[in-house]
Image (cartoon, rainbow, N blue to C red; front, top):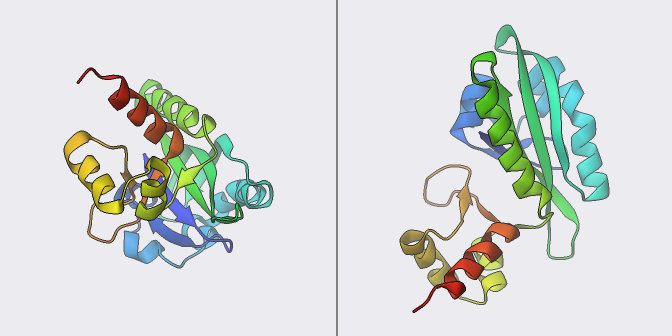
Length: 186
């Protein structure tokens, strides 16, 4: 599953290695470039959905696109789920994308991944975009929240596994984790 974050000019701000591999271009070569520069004509199919997410603040789910990428002439299919990343005042500042490539040999697997991503993103429009936001949401300090991730599988997502990488969490997953932990007998 490819993950990426885009600014309001539809430039790549961050992405995971899986999406870079799908595009056939290194992570570093994506950063600061627009969708059109990386995807070529395929970008024309997805850009209106990005603009809608920026304008409405609502996710755009299960957008299927077909075409050839700028690095591969073979016709391919992807499903995109786009969700707003809002600032503290509720304004959309960035858009997060979950991308799944649909391959004929893995259609069932991809459909399951798309359904899972759609249910996660459809269950909440709200993303916690930093350690501080995540800690505030659960009523703990940042250090405690990081410890929960290390020792208790607290649901943190990263675009890549490195120090200083972008972290975020889906409120629905965090709330579910808290409910499960508070329901356990001591």
